[in-house]
Structure formats: structure tokens, C-alpha cells
Length: 116
Length: 112
Image (cartoon, helix red, strand yellow):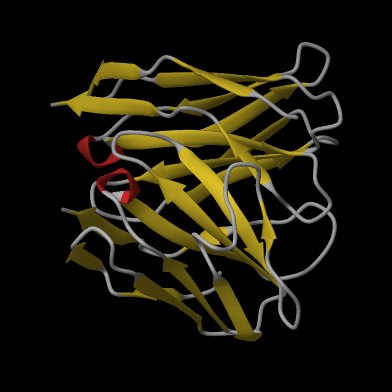
């Protein structure tokens, strides 16, 4: 399985500010995803990070709030913009080693965000 | 879209007993069903998965069964140990790009 790291591992931010979360994989992958996990809740897909093109956002998530970059096959960033306390969550990136078909996803350790 | 329901929400078992978690899905086109274990402060870890052309899969103390007709799948943990204590999530995928729909999670507590 791929080794995935995320930075920062946790942060405390003031409302109205923005935070950029990095996801680094130790091997090239085709698919990268960003999830949000609110306290005590399940995982909700924010968007699929596409290399060389704009991210594909799920219903309820917009690019202005969660801009995503994917400059190459091993790295992606998620920015949480103009934060409010409701954005306090764990943000997780996941990767699928190959494209198409039934894919296995591996998750990073997550970024724990608290917005005051 | 796909909807995945997971039961129970909490499960307390004595060490050495078995634990069973059940999930149902709504979309008959779903074809991939992974299970994840999430320990406190960590990201979800894939522990086992099953594809729609298989009815059962085992890996040591863990097994998953799939009933396509009834649209449900289950995780079975035998001879539970304290280190099995965690939140377990089921998921289903119908998307060729691997988009997963997760269940709500089951908090498993194994007491010595």
C-alpha cells in the first residue's frame, strides 16, 4: 500500500483565516481524494483531485471554499478558506494506486483542524 | 445516489468473543465493498474488502460476507482482542473512479 503523509497534523486557527493542508504520497498515484470527517461522524467526500485539471467537487462543496491543487502524481493540497467554527473537522486525503474499475483507497493520517 | 446504512452504532464484546457489523446498500450497481478500521487520532486503515463477484473473504480473524440479492454485507471478527477496539466503517462503490460512500461507523469496545 502507499505511504501517505499530511501536513500539518493538527492546527488551531482563527475564524476568517485560511489553512492549506498538504498531502504527499511515496509513489505516483492516479486518483487522489479529499474527505472531511466532522467530530464523531463518518467520512464525506469533498472532491477528487485531478492531475492537470480542475478538481471535481461533490454536492455541497465549492471551489471558492475548498480550492484544491494537484501539480503532480504524488502531491495535492486542500485549502480551507475563510474558516468558521463549523469547519472544525478532520481532513483526510486518500489515494488509489491505479485508475478505473474497482479501486482500493488508502488514507493518510488526517489533519485535525480546530477553528476558534 | 448510493446510501449505506451500518448497524450497530456501538458494540461491546468480551475479549475472545465474536463481533459482527452489518451494512446495507441501496444501489444494486455497487460492486466494491471495503471495510476500514479507525483508531483514535489516526486515519482509516483498510482491513479487508470484497468485490461483487465473491460471496465471502477471510483474512485471519477477519471475514466479510456479501449478499448481493439482499444488498447487504457484514464484517465478522473472531476471537476479539483489546486491540480490536476502534471505529469500523463500511463503504460501497459504484463509481468507476472509486468514489466511496461510507456508513455511519460502529464503535467497537473489547473488554478484557
